[in-house]
Amino acid sequence: MTETQLDAAVAAMEAAPEDGAVRLRFYDRLAGAELFLMLEAEPEGDAISPVVFELSDGACVLGFDREERLSGFAGRPVPYAALSGRALAGMLAGQGLGLALNLGTDAEYLLPAEALAWLAETLSEAPREEEARPERIAAPRDLPAVLLEALDAKLASAVGLARKAYLAEVTYEGGVQGHLIALTGTQPGAEPALAGAIREALVFSGLEAGALDVAFLSDSDPLTAELARVALRFDLPEPEAVSVRTVEAPGSNPDKPPRLR
Image 1 (cartoon, one colour):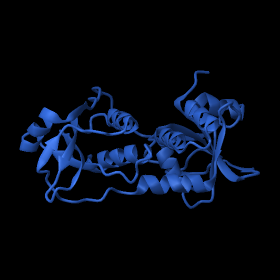
Image 2 (tube, rainbow, N blue to C red):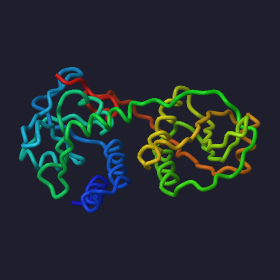
Image 3 (cartoon, one colour):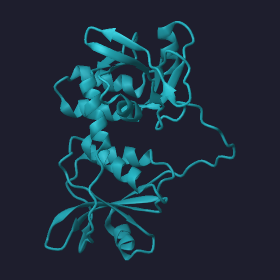
Image 4 (tube, rainbow, N blue to C red):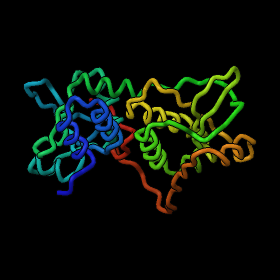
């Protein structure tokens, strides 16, 4: 079977267990991955009953990043719920359950309940809102490559939420300096998701204490034109046209997990 992104992240983490940056990249991959959670029975409405295994390290649920891995472990067709790692961590937070990831494969990995609680808490923290307008704008300098790569990946996954993002060094009133990422063409209501994604890029780059301001601008704002001249630009992908309307089954939306029963 082809190696998955989670496989590679697990292998990298096990090869360098003391490397915090590698461990953070694993959690980033886990949060964004689609996981298939083994269930005791078919969902009833939006309620589910995950299979719980008692291992030496404690009770855990079983999650796989490929459907065939789930069926291969079970040896038969079994009910499951598909949801993102982000949603699964939030659902399991406070339940005292760990996650056995890809059990029965060469890339199996056990996350204790404490690790899932940390991930859920980290992902749930909202950026702080403030009002300020920069007095000077310049091209970004001295930003770590790992942060630029993380921003590029996060924005590339924000399909259809905005059109462009501009990253620049800024100076505010009083001489306070920092960096700003401004998004244009933002879809109404997408601001929290975009701000959260940018915050995650900071956190999972190991730069949680770093400051990166986020702004949402119109194309006609004079600041947008100024940013276009000097800032580093990211072009966000546009969504593909969809003409077929589908109805979601319980557990089919990775970011809208069903309730535990």
